[in-house]
Image 1 (cartoon, rainbow, N blue to C red):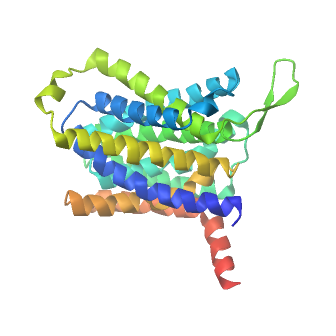
Image 2 (image 1 turned 30 degrees about the horizontal axis):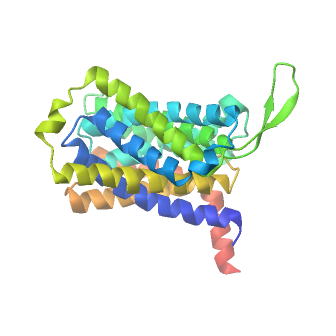
Length: 311
């Protein structure tokens, strides 16, 4: 099996873990402050990966540490918007489809910041994505709903996170002030993931300390709360993001994450079973349009898969 094929298989597994993680997070946020939850979730996951791959940290250069921390800072912003959107009460199905629009924004962000070519399919997909986000974000009075808007901001930063994460996980060319080019060392998947996750935990924990009251945790302390936090940290975060980063290290294509097209479908199905949520009206139309846009941007992959099956 080629590295590209391995990356695709791993990313499909990542989508399943990601969908399950939505359930873990929703249950946990019902019992504790949102920023504190993000802090514990990502800090525990990062520490676990740090312990597992401790020997790999000795050989990292300062530039590799710096890249990993930058990735973590961007991801922290995206996760803070994400958890506040979840805390606002937006249904998991709607939230997951909005978040999936990050795959549309990734190629455009890569173009703006790094001059990467944007596939023509991205421009075909963009109108459907924007129209879908409009249906998901606007109420009948044409006012923007705060929860959905928070998830849109989250999607933008998650898209930037994926671009930076892909570049950190692969060799890429850097041009200095003297206009001389050099190749930036890639960061191994495990330390890259661990440092990024711990950065998210530290930044969100600092924010939680400033704006949240931790007494709520003591009031709601229970075995269930511990279970949801640990499941989110070790299954929905440590295992998931290590697999995602490793998959990205197998392919240098900055658009590889779009194979995660099925994540919102898994999430919507799980939310329907677990929380009895349903997509109706504008939400259903918006989710369908966003999903269509993601299919369009990955149409090349679908054609390759069909040709592979026919041969």
